[in-house]
Amino acid sequence: MRKILFAILCFFLLGNLSLNAQDHNRTDNKGRKQGLWMDFYPNGQKRYEGHFKNDKCQGVFTYYQENGALWATNTFDKSGTKALNKTYAPNGSMIATGYYVNQQKEGEWRFYTEDGKLLTVEEYKNGLADGPSKTYYETGVLMSERQYVNDVLEGPAKNYYPSGALKEEGEFHNDKKSGIWKTYNEDGDVISVENYSAPDLKGFD
Image 1 (cartoon, helix red, strand yellow):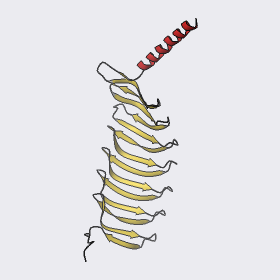
Image 2: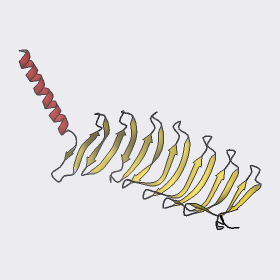
Image 3: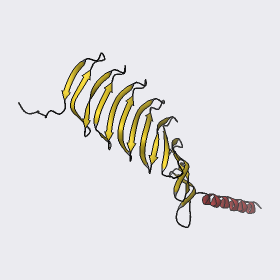
Image 4: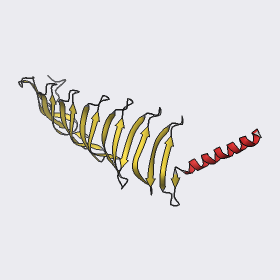
């Protein structure tokens, strides 16, 4: 009797496993992903889960660290090409948010410290930093302002003291300081001026 019961139990368990396998990671007769999809780490921990419709991501996709902690979420629009991303630190706090379009960062992205304080605000285009970039002290005071073009520093830049007073200003060209850069004390007096356009005369008298 025990052998029979064990055989019946195994039958139902295998049947349930088979049904569960059919409930996710399916494709239609055209090879397009449909319904719930999941992937797993080698240790068996879930890597991600989300739904597809005709090969396009739909709704919320959730991603996990190998230890099971939440890593990120992508909330897709109906087109399946644009998603609001939220990325999380191991302590569960959100450390980044912004949009992906065709899997590339697009528009404004905000980055935070693990204790939730705003760290950086940047603009992206086709996955590259493009436009203004601002960083902040943990107090919320503006620390620096930059401009990017195709992920390269280009244009005016300013640095600030923790008090908010201007500390330094100048321009970047092709990711390097260029032209006249001025440094100020907190009272606003110029304390140094450097010209980064001058030729490097090291080794010459």
